[in-house]
Image 1: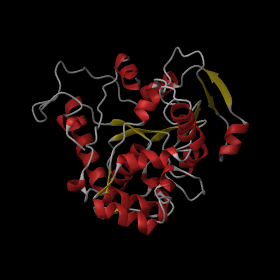
Image 2: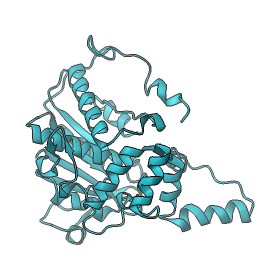
Image 3: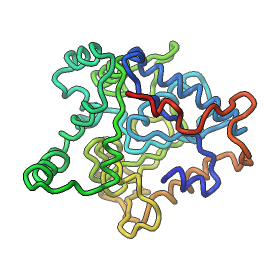
Image 4: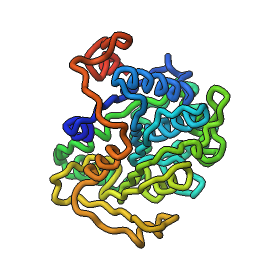
Length: 324
């Protein structure tokens, strides 16, 4: 829905669709994903005819997007016009209970590594169950009572259907995320790629940060901590609702609202104390912010791809239908 909204307003959108890994891809680590994003961004620039990109990452995709821009900063690459991080946490040194911290709660870090290493992947269903136990009353016991004890059919709810669309985690990526956790997150010398230490202070472009007010996976005060990590100016928006609903928040929703603070603030508490409430969706605010940091409009292509990058199939890719 966000993509459709931006497309209708003249933005060119390129999306990275990750393959659901199997044991054959057990050796895919963070460096593999970062380098893949680097190649994809080169293709996006070549196809669009633009020299710079507004990069967007949500949840764990925000981690890889921020690491990519850290690599660009270390190399002196100026491809990033801006960075938008939606319900993403990069640092856990503040002691927040986050999705990064979740990977350590399977039992212990070493047992978790052995578990994924033995199978080659950490199964998507295992991750789904772990996330559900972050909110057991809402995501486990309520359905157990309604469906099992009372014998009622579960109500159709598109957000929960989306939430159940899980993906596997390669063993190498799982291990890298655990090491990231052990070091406290991105701000603590956590990763080296191609000889470059990926320091978030190398991300000097402007950043747009979004947290969800009742997000149980990436709590909004943890998302706020990113402001102190990045090397550029940032704007923080606190959207209503939870992890997914705070993003799927289109204009026209009469219940939508978000909080901003244009004054000085250096903590989640001071942000909230001076925040002003805005009725409606935060999407138009974000759209205006992106346009202010774009190099101007370019003509859209009449057909997908380019001479160098020819389309090979319909989106999102034939691998989506492959068995996991």
